[in-house]
Amino acid sequence: MKTKALITLPLLTIAGYANAAGPFDIPTESGWSGFVSAGVNVTRNSSNLYLGPSGEDGANKQVNSLTSDPSGKNQVSPAFNLDLRYTLGDSGTQFYLGNLIQDTVRLDFSQQLGVRQRLGQSGIVSVSYVFSGLPNKVWQDPYAIGTDRSDTRRDINGVQVGWQNIMGSNFSADYSYRDISVDSENSGQFLLNNIDPILGRTLTQQEVNMLKRSGKSHTSKVSYFYAIDQRQSLIPEFRYVDNSLDGDAMSNTQFGGLLSYFWRSEDSQYNIVSNLYLGKTDYSDANPVFGQKTDSTDFAANVVLFKNNIFDVKKLSAYAGVAYGEINSDVNFFNTTLTNFTTGLLYRF
Image 1: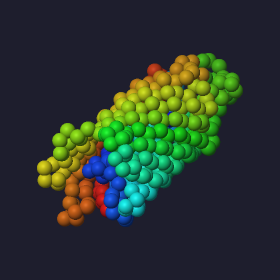
Image 2: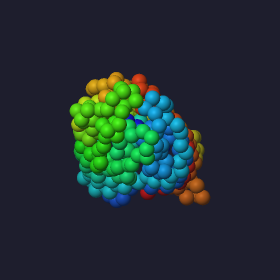
Image 3: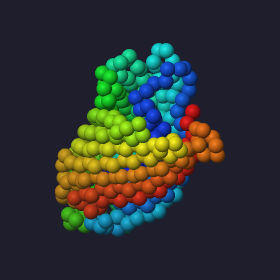
Image 4: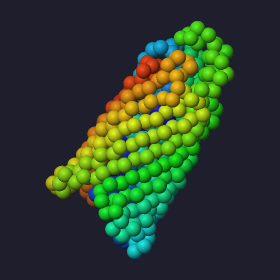
């Protein structure tokens, strides 16, 4: 699924900040840990395809052309993030529930429920069940023109395995498998019964079948934690995604790189976390609506500032950040731009 996921940049940043002190660590003492954050997102979403966090109210419910760039729409929505962990001290075992920190350019409100195990000096291995968290909605038929479109749920279920701090190094790797299901898949149904203005004819049933978005997804990632000094660090990450969907025109492979930067002030009162993502998406077959592939280049960047010890509460922080992302497709209809401002409070425990 191509982004809606630009909004996850703030979530990724907040989770990254909350775990930046020891991204590979499991506490040595038994008990609960994690964080909770709450705030507000102000978003401008320019897309013909993707619903923002407000659902239909924050998206272009009706489009009148298959050849034009999308118009923008402003949205205000709550921002909530939770990471909950329980550690069995001496055993090095940790159970966790939280947001899946993944895909900055593809919005999946995914969650993980899993277990991590410390293997002495060999690192930490993990396995988790991946499932849909907050409602993730898409249009039943994105290509219906001149009429109101209806939304539908997009659900995922799968598994992720990972190995962090591989053999005592700063390298990490993980693999995830996800089953993707679109509840009411009607892509292309409008053009099955109405003339496609680009082709000058209606679509065939075989062409409509090429637009199905359910299927399977495989993601592989490798990252490296690099400490610049005691107050700065970098995490470059490279990823490969194979989306084998029911529709050949929607199946694609994605290559991308994410660079995360962490900074802490000398007095530990302030933190800055920033992310930069660049990627490329290549589709398996031509989209029959347009008569060509919808390959794209993807870009996203953000920066978030944290002020710690708010109201003299040691574990309470305030945050504010901005994010920008875009998808530049070979077909204008698929172009997407998203600008986001977020602010709120975060409490670690």
